[in-house]
Image 1 (cartoon, one colour):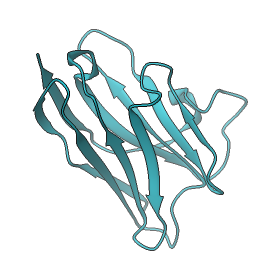
Image 2 (tube, rainbow, N blue to C red; image 1 turned 90 degrees about the vertical axis):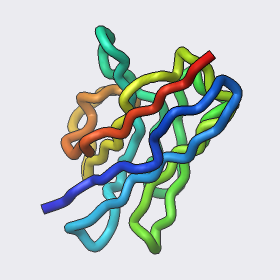
Image 3 (cartoon, helix red, strand yellow; image 1 turned 120 degrees about the vertical axis):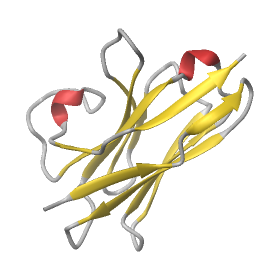
Length: 126
C-alpha cells in the first residue's frame, strides 16, 4: 500500500523559509503526478504546486516565484521549498499523488489525486 508522509512544517515569522518533505513508501517508484496542496481553516483545499514525472511543474499564482517543488527520485521524496512566507501561507499542507491521470481535471485540482498524506502544519506569524 502506497503511503505519503509529510514532514518539515512548523512556525516561522513572515519573510522566513521552510522546506516540506513528502516521503513515498510502498511502491518501487513515486507517483507520476505529485503535488502539494494546502487548506486553511474554513477554506477549501487548494493546489499549491505540482510536478509531473519528466519535470514539468505548475504553480498557483499566489506562490509563483516564492515556492519551488522538486523531487529526489532516488529517495522517493517530494519537496516544497517555501521562501518569503507570509501569514496568508498559514495552512495545513498536504502531499498528494496519483500514478495515472484521473480525468481532465487541472493538475492543481485535488480531484486529480487519489493518494494523500496526513498533512503538516505551517504557521506564519507577522
